[in-house]
Structure formats: structure tokens, C-alpha cells
Image 1 (cartoon, one colour):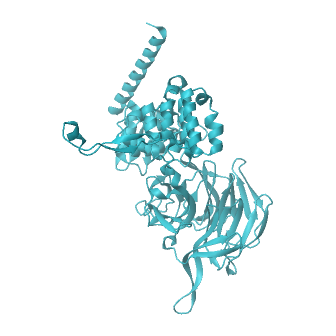
Image 2 (cartoon, rainbow, N blue to C red):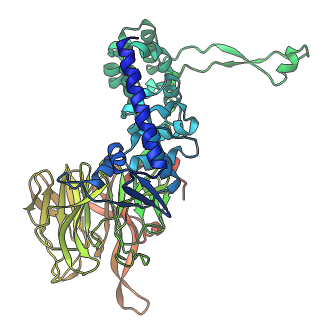
Image 3 (tube, one colour):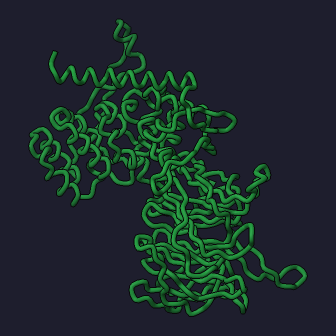
Length: 590
């Protein structure tokens, strides 16, 4: 026997022996040293297996300095026990039964616990239409994975050839195809002619087509592809190829072919080749929308078309939460006033959710271990920060900053803010986190601003605002920080300011038309909006009292003033507001 073949056979035999032995130990409940509690079920397992297969569990079983923790039981919240059982069995057997009905649930749980092979890898080619739809929906992220390169040609072409592909730019499709080709160039270059039918070259920018498509060495070396390139160039210049006529079969064709009399079939034009297809993919209908999230629903508002769409129902989202859209266009919702009456030891909870806009649902993430309100959220790369706020148990202002690692799915405490505050605003820009204004425990509002550099683990004080304020709106718009409204010792304010980050200087900005607090400032699609807030309103008894307003204003750059858009937006009541890029074609219109 060939030594190389013998070595491979021995490796396979040893792997099989190990796998069968581990599965036998699990089935007989031997040497188990950990239990996973999922809902009303308990799953015994071996920590060494879970840690070897999942960075998530490795983090749970070891301290930050690498010491092994005595972790006998792990409670996993918001997980389907049936799905978790399948994944555990997969880790011990490398076998999982993916179907159209369960593939999405398995993908979500596997992704949460960082077990990518449970939903990808060798299972991809055989999973059927449901799996292809899942990949098409999440194409921009999944095409970067190594498992993507293992797709069979027919599977890849079925995915990238369809209208349902969720990509904003055709460049992503072309580049993922060429990456797939180059990963096994000798075999796959022969399929490129067929693959060309799946790319919609007329949707590519002219400059990109010239530099990236025409100049590609593989494409340049193929005479047949060069002919297609010329046809594409002609089509982009307005000269489409003549379409031949083909006979259109009539309904009675079966009878005609069997000898029955009938008229000759009509003629119709042949379809253009796939590489001349200029129909936009479904993902190309994405646009920047103002997303309003309250304890009932997440509603997206298109200010240009004056239309609202349902992004997701949100009954599990508490009131008074804080929301943030990351640079990767992921929405996170943290906190709110929620009392878990079943949890006698820790009834106050700070729940944490991420919006799955494709499934129109919420993914439960690990709750923040330090329950608080009136805090601010910021981000830097793959980290999310909850800055200061008021402790829900002691009712005291905090200076602590909690940091959530998106990849490790774990909370830690990081560098403290230089002072204890609540009711401040937090924004992020270029990897830095800014904390602005707020109120101290002695009920004094401040005008101070601090910037946090996580890489240096330091807070630094910057230029102070002209007006001290708390409970105000703040946003980064066109590279500058804008604040508006709020309250201080004198009452509500309409004052607005703009901060030049490069010059470290505050200047006066257009005053808001009404004194109000808790206004939501949103920068979306290049425009600046102000949504809702609280103002002093005259009641029926002629007295003034604070009341929520749900109007929408837009800042007019040319006139340097605020202009009213909507007197009432009912979905803004009790909402946090952010800008998010969403696909209106996928959401129900309200």
C-alpha cells in the first residue's frame, strides 16, 4: 500500500475510533463533568469537547488569565432545547440532519455559540432549497467564510443566479465568484463560462468593469469570455444583440403532435443571455431609514417617501431601553425597566437584544451583568460599550463602563469614566467613544465631554459645551457632533451646538423650534432629523405640564433652520430612534 494512503487510512481510523468512543461515553453518561441547562431540559456533556469545538464555551470554562474554572453547570437562555440537542450530538458525531425546516434555527444557534461547521461546511451542498435561501439572504457575510469555497458549482450558480440574492452591489457577487474560482483554479476555471450567466455585469459601474473584469488575468486568457466581454460592452453602450425568434408552443400542441389539426405556433423573442440581465437583485432595494423601536414594534420610516414599514414586532423589548446601530449596520437594544418576578435573587434585569432584520425577529444576547438606566451606548470595532448611568438597585450614578465583545459574546468591565453621571449622551466616531453632558448625584447638570480610546484604555477630557445639559439628543452628522435640547437647572432648553472633532471646538447650531428634552437626533441618508421628545404643554386646565410629543423635524442645510415634517408620528411614542439601512421590499408596509 502507498505510504501516503496508509497514513490517511490510519488517521481516518483513529478519528472514527475517537468519535465513536466519545459518543459512547456521552450516551452512557460516563466521565461527564458539565451540564447544559436549556429551558426545561438538561444536557450532560464533557467540557473538553465543548471547549475544543467552541471558542464561546472555551471562554466560559477558563478565566482571563487562562486558569480553568470549576464550571459544573451552564444555563443557556433563549435557546430551543431540540436545536441545542442536535448541535451537541453533532459535536460528538459530526452528523447533523439539516432540513428546510430546521436549517435556519441551527444556523442561528451555531453562530451564537461559534460553531460554524454545524450549519455550513460539508452540509452546504446537500441541504436543499431552504439552505440556499438562507445563504442568499446572508450572502454578503457568508461569502467571506472558508466554507463558502466548498460549494459545488451547481449550488453556487443556483445561489448567485437568482433575483433573491441579498446584496447591495453586484461587485460582491463577481468578487465572490472569482474567489471561489481561484480557490481551486485548475478545476473551476472550466466552469467560468457557465458562471458568467449568473453575473449581472450591466449593474457594475463602468470604471469597475474596466479595471476589475476586463483586466482580470483569468478572463483575459479565455477567448470565449472575451467575446462575451465585448457583447457586454456593446450592451452598456446601448447596442443589445438581436434576439432570434423562437416558436411559441400553443396549448393544443400535444394534440397537434399526435396528429390533431391546429394552427402553427406563434413566434416570440428569445431571452437575452444571463450576463446581460440588468434586473436589480432584491438586496439592491436597501436604503437608509429612520428606525423607531418601542415596546410594541420596530417601525422603519422613509422620510423621502413618507412611508412606514414594520421591521419587527417588539413585545419583549422593555421601555426606556437604549439602542445603537453599529458600523456594520447591526441594531442592538440594551436595558430598559424590566423586573423578573421569577428571579428572586436578581429581579432587576438589563436584557440585551440584536435585531435579525431578515427574520424580522430579535436575537437574545447575554444580559448586561450591571443593571442600570439612563446610560449611553457606544461602539469601537467589535465592542459595544454601556457608559455610566444610574444603578437600578442603589439609584446612584455610576462611573463604570461595561464592554460587550461581539465575537466572544461576553461582558466585561473596562476603564471607568472620570466621574459618576447619568442622563448623558454617548456617540461613536472612528473607533472613539464620546460621553457628553449629563447629571451628577447632587442634581447638577454638566457641560463636560470625554473621549474614550479603548486601544489605549484611557478617557480624555475635551472642550466643554457652551450649555450644560442632560437628557438631550446627540448624533454624529457629516463628521461632526450635534447636540440639541435637554434640561438643566433653568429648565428645558432649545439650544443646539455643533462640535468640530478635528478642531476640538464647540459652536452654536440652529436652535430647535421648541424647548424639549429627550429629543432623538438621527442622521440618515445624509439628512438630519429630530424625532419626538418631551415638552411643556398646556393642559385642559390651562396649566403647563411635561408631555411627550411625537413629531418629526428635518434640518434644512441651505436655510440653516429646522423645518417641521410631521405633526404626529404615532410609532415614535416611547421609542428610541436610530438610522439603519433596511430593505423596504422585504418589510410589510404600514
